[in-house]
Length: 171
Picture 1 (cartoon, rainbow, N blue to C red):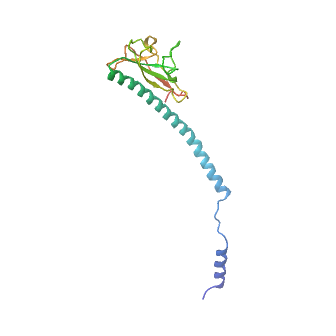
Picture 2 (tube, one colour; picture 1 turned 180 degrees about the horizontal axis):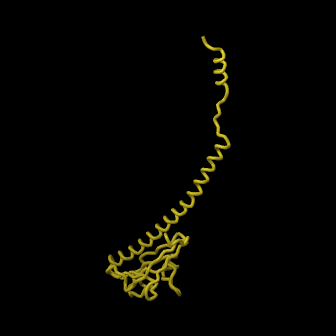
Picture 3 (cartoon, rainbow, N blue to C red; picture 1 turned 90 degrees about the vertical axis):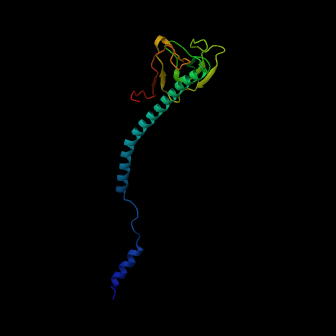
């Protein structure tokens, strides 16, 4: 014995569509949570990208310095690094050169810190990819870096500094 009302209710429930959507309140809650997460994540991602770019540039500078030193030792001759804006000569002006605009490495046969006729250009390093700047305030206003055949600096000291585009010192 089956209940006829039970069969009628079962038939009605099979014909009625089930609620498969979201309410406007549920959607607003999800959008609100997503917005808060974005507000937290975007500054952190921007900071991460800035730190990563700084690491890339400082690694590139270290590669250039290490390459110059290694070549000086391998070739047993004085190597000079200096800023350039024409890919072949050193660029000097009052207060130094613009190291972020490009750097050349050459065999400095007369050890004067300038690339003269006949001195072999070994490498040209392109400008830095960002708007940061590099400075080399060296003792004696020497705006170049020289490595001797032994891999030592040629009577120089100074501090090679990189400042990222956002000027944050903690990077």
